[in-house]
Length: 77
Image (cartoon, rainbow, N blue to C red; front, top):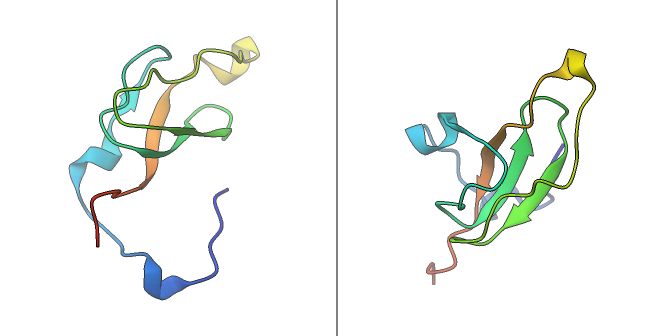
């Protein structure tokens, strides 16, 4: 689970971009922390990078599915 210390540096969002699962190998639409919906593993991906495909699950966990957890707005000032 992602952790943070400075609450004032993050903001909550209801944006639908956080509601979509992506298979391994898809390109990251946004830079940020992605979380596997099946196992909870987290990984960082930059916008345009491919999402990781270097781990697998037990059959009972289902396939790897990445979901944006934290969007890193590198354009913010």
